Amino acid sequence: MVVDFVRADSSPTVAPATPLLATPAAAVQAAEALAPRLFAQAAATDAEAVFPTQEFDWLRAAGLFTAALAPGLGGAGLGAPTATEELLTVLRHVGRGNLAVGRLYEGHTNALLLMQLFGTPAQAARWAADAATGLLFGVWNTEAPAHGVRLEALPGGRYRLHGAKTFASGAGYVARPLLTGALPDGQGWQMLVLPADAQPPVLDRSFWRPLGMRSTASHRADLTGLEIGPEDLLGPPNAYYRQPWFGGGASRFAAVQLGGAEAVYDETRRFLQALGRTDDPYQRQRLGQMALLIESGRQWLRGAAAHAILPNDAGAPASPAAGAYANLVRTAIEQIGLAVLPLAERCVGARGLLQPEPFERLHRDLTHYLRQPAPDFVLADVGRFVLEGNDLY
Ligand SMILES: Cc1cc2nc3c(=O)[nH]c(=O)nc-3n(C[C@H](O)[C@H](O)[C@H](O)COP(=O)(O)OP(=O)(O)OC[C@H]3O[C@@H](n4cnc5c(N)ncnc54)[C@H](O)[C@@H]3O)c2cc1C
Image 1 (cartoon, protein in one colour):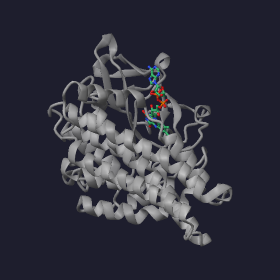
Image 2 (cartoon, protein in one colour):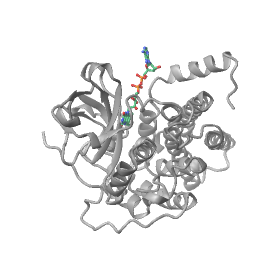
Image 3 (cartoon, protein in one colour):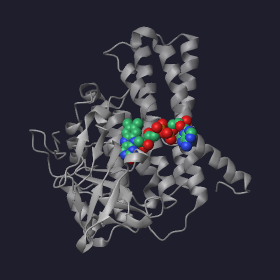
């Protein structure tokens, strides 16, 4: 099986050098400006065999590829706790442009945040330089339990990998997947950053025949036989699941999801305006309801920026309230997405669900991306938390 690994800048045109975005606010402006361009291109990459390479060139040219890095590493400081609202807004805008690109960009961003949090200064500098040259990062944790990833110890602190990841977004394109695996002898769950250009996994593309999010290339990636050195290990064992970062990260995918719901809302409005169907009281009622839902989602993201902030010090305490709040954010935004879709369908009717109108793609993508791990458990866990007498903030 051929692994068509490419750099994010592999399109025929030469990608311009990364301009530095000076501030998180500048990153928000850049993402907002890019969203319509991403949206205009989204139908062209709506296929399992097409990766949005050009879109990542645009993100890179806009400075967004490295925006999550600290200024000292050449970024806009979007990962700073004080920039949480800006980070979530950037993710929302990218998701609004193209939900598949938003998913991939969130994985890239998550990896950059984790490597800055848990990496040594030398590792952070090395991986920041990789991102600056256009290498795409991702986070691959999901696996089928029977075929999960484990590390076999070799001499010299090296490890050989065994097993596979599923839903490995960007597989074949992500050059630096941050992945997890079981250390020998029950020593724990270890993060590592695989140099996939030198050590390419074997991909099973038959895994990825999805309802939506087609161009995320979320294949099954078999890592068996690949070898890594001590310089590729990230953080101590079990750092990946350390709170509040693991649970708190839910606010980021929720922000991307809300962007997808916003695209549905924006397009519904455009569709009705184009048809001159703006005077009908029932359509107005539905648009009012959609406006309420979207604004509620934005308020939840503001709430996340106030109450589910992730510290950038790996020694910070667990902060269970922040985790519970992030679980509320993801649950609320899931419910918002699920409520927006049928309202839009009723507004645009059967003809609106025909291509080249974007609604059928938007519907497929959002429906699929709203499926995130253990949705029932996380809400029940908020219930447990408050029943134990805790406040959310
Ligand atoms: C487009 C896309 C891209 C993705 N990319 C990545 C990626 O790059 N990296 C990565 O690591 N992952 C990725 N994922 C996987 C993602 O993080 C989740 O693992 C996946 O979406 C889980 O969804 P699920 O609905 O199967 O979850 P589940 O947790 O299996 O939930 C499904 C249902 O089962 C219920 N349930 C959960 N546990 C139990 C149980 N023990 N007993 C009974 N019922 C249970 C839930 O409440 C829910 O009703 C991606 C997913 C998608 C859709």
